Length: 455
Image (cartoon, rainbow, N blue to C red; front, side, top):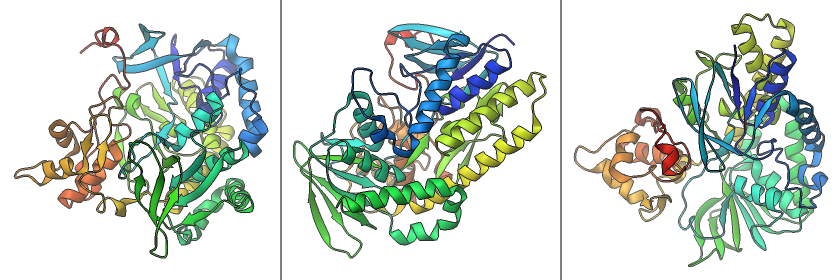
């Protein structure tokens, strides 16, 4: 075993690296960001005087431990920061670093590529001033900036409460937190949420802190549109009592939870299954993260679980890799890690019900609503393609006809909504319309780098 490569520098990647280093290996850790931490434990730019206790709250201790662990590992691994992995072929990673294309062959690969925001289209959601929840957090942590002077946090995600509280503590004026899932759904999901009582308690504390700060929290709302012509001027909603309301603001942080970043996993050979709870296609793995020959997945790139599950699953993937190469592993520790990951992912399934993906909003989307912002494809164009004589009922055919998913994001953001729109237009279960197939490059790269990809 010569080349063991980990892609991703969040909790899963760093923990996997630590297990491999303890076993005497020197793994290559490839990180798209310049510093480790992932999204949740992102390290602020050194030039910013941000108060980590304000940003991280009760998670500040875990943040410090992760970065301390990496500091102890950095000279014992081959760390390659600011390096994008944009393709995988024949056990070779295709990379781009500072504009220079490269390749990294591997004998075994651990993917810890994390997750990204899940978005449902909304009229005028492409206006300047609308950010994903994750994007709003990046701007705050990475640049020390606020996305606006009066902000609405909109969607259905536990990140709504956390991001709103972080912005409030950083001096932002929060117009409202608008949650599209009714509070009764959260009570109904309480049994699964109790699988991680400490995380549940943090969520309750976030909500209470926002309430004590006088920030309105509106549950069970239906978003109707973002108001404004050239920029955001407000959010128009229907509240839980059926009343239409306009909430004035100049910025919106928007999202419906997270979806795994599975593009590299597919290119590396992983198989996929449809998960009805999340309404997403997820890679198939065993309990320890094995996803194929010499391929291991950990963290949110395998299934949404949060930072603690990411760290534990990163350790499991590293142990599985070592076992597959003939090195006995501590069974007691493996059992403990499996239980921890299982419990935390069960908690995430509870969150998926407590903060629901708004399937019912698909039918209400106007034909003029932009579904794919990269290619400016509307909901009406997608519906028209599906409902035409002999129209397709499979998302990749719809993509070919409409160009939805062919832009810079390669369907990473419009893909889940495309599946729902196609399923709604043809009256088929969402699992039957398929999922967008991944093609390299998974993110935008210069043409000279793309030319190096083998057919």
